[in-house]
Image (cartoon, rainbow over all chains, first blue to last red; front, side):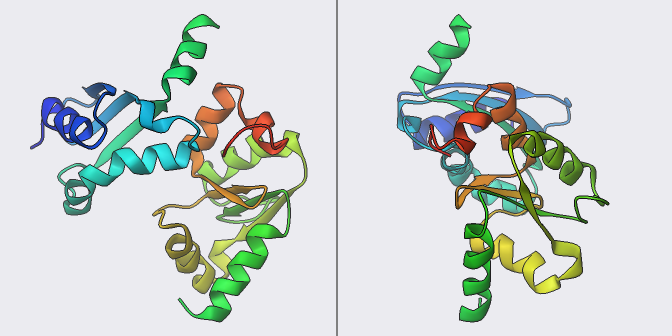
Length: 85
Length: 106
């Protein structure tokens, strides 16, 4: 079973300098959701942003240990815009 | 993937401004995610749909083509946008119309 902190650490390794929140939304340790705000996302399509987050977790997604990871991804600019609307 | 299949997928994805690979067709969506994707896209323009259920080669082929594991899959202006979650999120952020208008990156 993975915990939220483990997932957060893998994402942070892959995307240094990002802000990462991970939440276990079923309480069963295999369905998570994450919000990631990363400077690496600037100018990237959402699908590319998601693939950057999935990449370091591929092995656990493939094995099924991590069954689902719902993502919300933002560049710092997108995140700022969201906060002010 | 055969060159023929790749060429066919390239042709399909470039054929219209909005292309939706879905289960079923616009009149009879066979899956809730496909139906929802269609609902979000239709107000933005003509949606060209490709029914993956009627063609097993396309059903697997599109997943290999985009390296994305699920259906539906959405292409806007020839660019792969993602699946239903991403579409929903773009809609909620009010970015979907801009995308169709070519005003923001997919």
